[in-house]
Image (cartoon, rainbow, N blue to C red; front, side):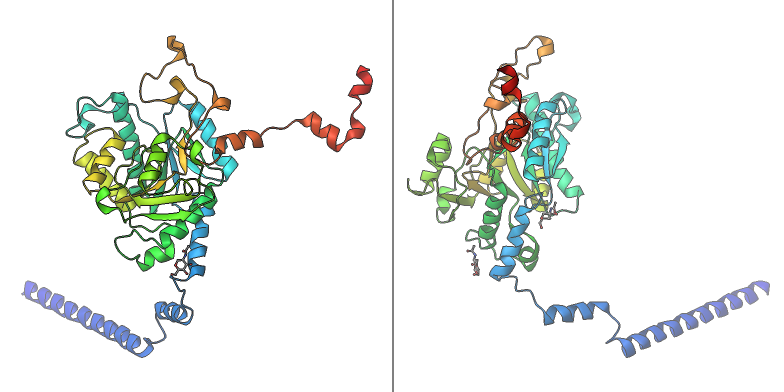
Length: 392
Ligand SMILES: *[C@@H]1O[C@H](CO)[C@@H](O)[C@H](O)[C@H]1NC(C)=O
Ligand SMILES: *[C@@H]1O[C@H](CO)[C@@H](O)[C@H](O)[C@H]1NC(C)=O
């Protein structure tokens, strides 16, 4: 009996609750039907958009998007650079350069191959791969992961021995205008790309600092060429780059005046490259989860040739390696440690060099930091100079 009463009460309670819930729901639905036209904030902003549409294809919109290239990350989400923790000399240089050029660079520590657990080495790694090459792969893989863990659409990845053309921001603004009107895309840009992406997002990798270039000979018409005042002339190009420009069909008169963009096919060196989220995902999949078949840049070339990565490369590049000669130039083999008695020969930062770029961010920085205080006093405040009198 008690049990029956209880269950009846429970049933009534349940019915009551359902009734109230139904009432509340019907009031909400009713209110929504009645006030629906006023309520949603969305429709207000939508009508603003309709009243005042931004023409995503207009030259004015394209120009304003291209201006993002002038920001501290050159129109990419962030710039990260890879540097072995003990190369504080190179980190000092990157810090100085970033500050001189109004760039924001984030250090991602390089990895020593010896610190990678043998369990963490990808499948199918060839025997010939050096420990240092494995470390280099790991550092780049960490950069890909960094992008995926962020909210950014793209990241630009630098190695720490880099130099660039002093007019780098203008170069990227010009590149953005070209890429927004790309003639080598597979598909038209989406509205999201037109609205937000200075370089589009139809690529996994955008090579902007490579040392070896080449297009797929089966697709010769896929090439975009434009006038760029920030291109170096022939005597500043390596033989490889000069040869590539000729293969792309540039005449002697055009070399030194034009830059070329092609779908990446045979591009080497990871001195500077941008990645999209999709690119980071494909790289991490193909070059970690599924295996690794060579040094990081070699394996990327394999994937491009097989058509399993999509990208573009720019010739001449905007970034290039800065060289001082000797052991300081590489962390990839025979590092050399003076504490172990190794000799560190080389010409030093002030006599270093780079090819393939117009001018040198490093040399321009050195020049901009030179002052002669006493000469300035003589020139600006000659009245204060008595030195000549005293010594006579
Ligand atoms: C890109 O195309 C638009 C529309 O077709 C045009 O107005 C604009 O001038 C072009 N920009 C460049 C840099 O060629
Ligand atoms: C630079 O522009 C890009 C593209 O709009 C943007 O994602 C990035 O956050 C900007 N960087 C800075 C430092 O403002």
